[in-house]
Length: 430
Image (tube, rainbow, N blue to C red; front, side, top):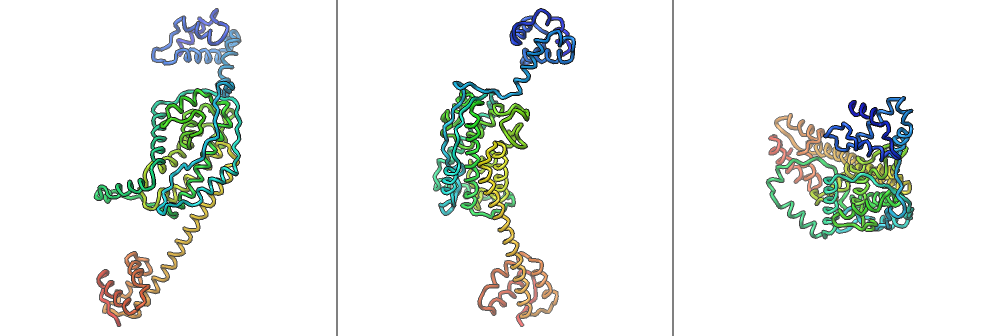
């Protein structure tokens, strides 16, 4: 804005007031040449003054006081603001309840109560009530989305288990032709729904506790007015002291008010680790994992969490806790993740071993039957062995249906009949 810079060179003289704000107000009344499209004209005026003095040593020396004000203003932006005691938020020790409703077909869930007691006993919640800071309000659309997130979670948590089963039945029985035409994504479920819940529940409970610890520890940077505005928009409304806040509620609050906790500079942030400058994307990624499988009905008979999702959730949970600087909760979370990874490795190894054993048994089954049959076409005999060596799915099904029958004579008869029909062979019993 060359025109504005030239205007300032002329009009700064004799227009320096007692403060930076008064100086800007006085210059603004002189109608500076700022484009009509500029929304914040006073900010543009201040920015132009800063650039002018920065690039012009003579003017910088001439208007030393103004330059000092501008530098102080810039430095203030780089520091987190501390709210006085009368204006800062006060948080109560919130309840720790189930963050995920784990659906178990047997009606039980593994270790949930035990994990809950361990968390409450082992982690003494520290109340450090100190001072806080106010910043930009979030976009209306994002707030609406977060309200919808909480509303859907609240609605699900109030549904009884029979209601959820009924909803499943409706889903499974409606539009069967449409469902059949929908392609399915390959997924691996190594754990039962109850086992999935035994991992997911404590993971989310630990993260919820870490989030609450964070805002209580750093409440001196959180104005009570910001908290009140947030809780009033929640659906259902939350207590202003967050005594009834759950994981998604606290996470949404931090995401929406991220500038309370970081200035975007590494030396002025309350966060830690690789995401300390701006952890918004990390928190949103974790929120997506926790919300998508919490707020929507189960559509998988094997449960809500496949192996990939469990591993992703546990990894993101660790990253969030590291970012929040909660060393005490890092250990228990790491233990859960290591146990999860070890179990997945064990079950994968067991699956491979079982497949190897099945392969050996399949070849033995083929050789045993080859010794009891004959064919006018020797290629048919060779093909039987080839099917076994290749682990052919159809041949594997035949083996599973016949191999464990006690009457071996019946086994050979059925084997010949099925192979002739299924593979168009010419086999006979010797």
